[in-house]
Length: 262
Image 1 (cartoon, helix red, strand yellow):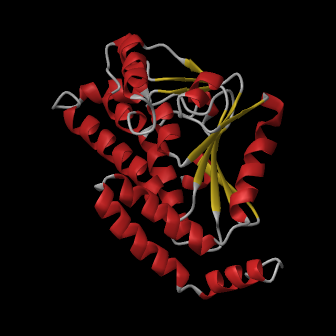
Image 2 (cartoon, helix red, strand yellow):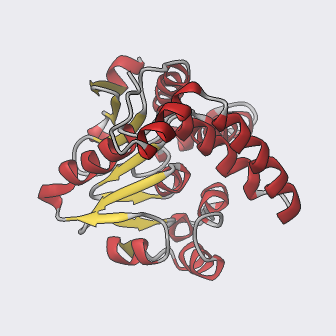
C-alpha cells in the first residue's frame, strides 16, 4: 500500500515522498496514514538518506482527514467512537514520528494544506511553499474544532494567530504563513520544485551525523528549563566532537580546504 499511496523517489541522499491520492486531495485516510507511517519507519533506519522532502500529487498538498471515511464510522455499534479514537491516535503518532526521524523533513506545499494537512506542515522540520498556497485549520466551519492540529501549530506559531485561525476557519496566504513562522520560504509555483531541492541539497551537503545529532537535541532541549537545556546540549556538543568526521571537518577548515567526509 505504501508503494502506491506514498511514492518514493531518491535523488542521491534526498528522498522525495509524494502523497499520491489526488482524487481526495491526498486526504489522511486510514490507508494514507498507514502508508506514510511505513515510509517514515523505513527511512528512520536508512543512513544513506540525509534529507526527506514531503509533497503532494495533484491540486493540493493535503486537505486533512478523509471526512467520508470518518462519517462512515458512525455506522459502527459504538457510533464511531473506537474508530475515531484509533484514527486520531495513529495520526498523532505519525506527527510525533517526524521530529524523531534522524533526517530533516521538508514539506513542499502547493495548493492547499488544510486541517490535518496544515498540521502535517507544522510537524515537519522545514517548509517551502508556492506563493499561491493556502494554509488553514478550518474544521470549525463544519462544527469540528481542529484540536489535534492546534498542538503542532501552537508550537511553531504565535498563539494568538493560531487561535484566530482555529476559531474563524480563515486561511493564511503563503507570505503570511512565512511571516508567522509556519513555513520557511516561498517560491513562484513554477519554481517550487527547484527551491525545495536547493534547500534540501544545502542541508544534504552537511555532515549527516552532525545534523542528526543536532536535530535530536533541537527538540529535546525545547521542553527543558534553561539550565537543563544547556546541560543537555553541552553533552551533545561533546558527542558531536568525538566523531572522527567532525575532527576532519574542523581540520579541513583550519587548513582552508574542503572536508573529506567520504
